[in-house]
Image (tube, rainbow, N blue to C red; front, side):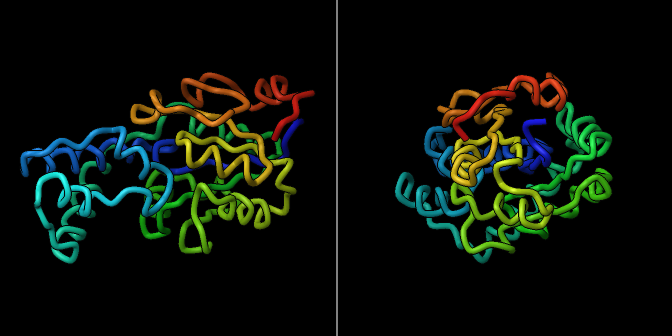
Length: 223
């Protein structure tokens, strides 16, 4: 195979947790007479501190929200809206397929472990993973390569033999910088965004098997 390990992003790739958070902030902006555009919000996708809605809302509408007051409310509402979300199509199948093929598996997310691990546990995915890497484990999150390189290290697989599934531009950049195969699986918020040179673009993880992906990548270069 062209790869010996598969690394999955979390938000927007395993569950569509990105859309509810964007919707929450859109509601807050409208309450204060402003509009939040996807163009501005997109800088926040797949990373941390790429876009600050508190500062942006203050600049657009003069509304200064207390972070200490609003952050817990936002977290609670985000949890609530994500509780009924299913796994995105093909996630469980690709993880199970990787296990069957003897490939190592990991999740690498710019979100914190307190967010990522409970959802993986709730959906029964932890037994299918060899490693879970979050922003708590690295100095820099995506688009830096640190998360993916750490995942490769924990799986004991060279970075060049890892395939990454990502939905965001920041995640794809990180995969390229780590020297890995980068497969884009854009979601509702990222389908219209420029995707930095993915080796393959999928509509969902159920579109193709890992064996088929290996065939597509065989003989290709440019990681």
